[in-house]
Length: 443
Ligand code: SF4
Ligand code: SF4
Image 1 (spheres, protein in one colour):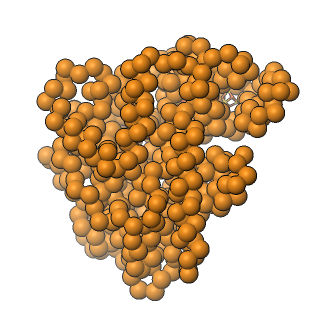
Image 2: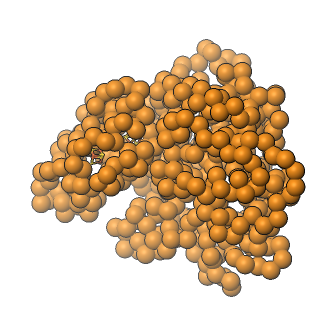
Image 3: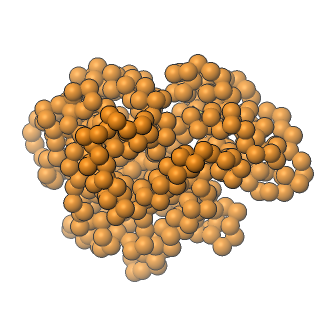
């Protein structure tokens, strides 16, 4: 694609990087077919190629972002299916990030919109505030039908019961079982530890069983993905720097640090991107790149370590839902399924597995109509497999799909229950098969 940036504009390293990305696009349009919003709406402006054109015009102009551009960029899920499909390897992820930062800086959103986005950015990354907000949402549950669309989405996010905080989410060291083979840090995250604390517990047990000393580092918290997708770049960088400093401290201790293990693929995509995020910050660029190099999804490290002894017994079939951040963001395709098979589960693949479930961070709250249509489609495809257990590697998908199943009379919130279809994290099943407890809610 030809671009027309001025020399002055190109002096900004962020614009220079965007220019390089834009120039790789050859307008072939292959990406449109796999873009969920294009599939739903059939509008070129709601597909990647149309958005790339709009981003080019937005960045070339020094004027505030036009409302029409904001509408179509806001509708993008950041699912990155377009990057998997693109034959020219266009780095859409960093391009849309730049557009969001420009929109945030120049577009005056309606007050209610600004308020909602600020609230999400403030509350969700903080587990204590998030837990309180879920309690409030639960109380508002009976009045859900009376609420406007976006608030309804927030209330729907509240689980039927809000689990107590788990001990694993506090700073600590979990000793390796037997000889220590690796020393790893586990990102315990933000929303996940509130919504389903069993995931971090199962991850720590699984890693320790295979010889990992697991460290929950003091000062590590939200990865920054949530605010990053809202265009709040400075906040995302602050959160990234806090994590980098926390993990560096661990790395400087005796024994060093072999890996940073992440069990929410949305967070994994972001931590692996810290190097890019801070590349123009001389004080942090090298440190961020080092931390990104240590980041690994729990299924990547478990594929290296192997499961070890798997307990005997027949296991049910499992439908595997690959989160967009897992398959498109990190290109992790086979490891989770192979591990499940190694653990004795039959693995079922749903149709249209490349399409987003509509969760996408806070997308289901900010774009409830489109998210709802994608969820409906996902639920139909998942049900068609016939599996009564769905496994996924991202908390956002887990909660979204469990909510969709509950609405369709086939579940009882995350973790299933009620005799319906259960939705669990992949590591919970792997932990169960290697000596851990049966995941909550399994039929
Ligand atoms: S597939 Fe890639 S090169 Fe083709 S239009 Fe889409 S982004 Fe551009
Ligand atoms: S990130 Fe997803 S929704 Fe956005 S343009 Fe790419 S495929 Fe479409």
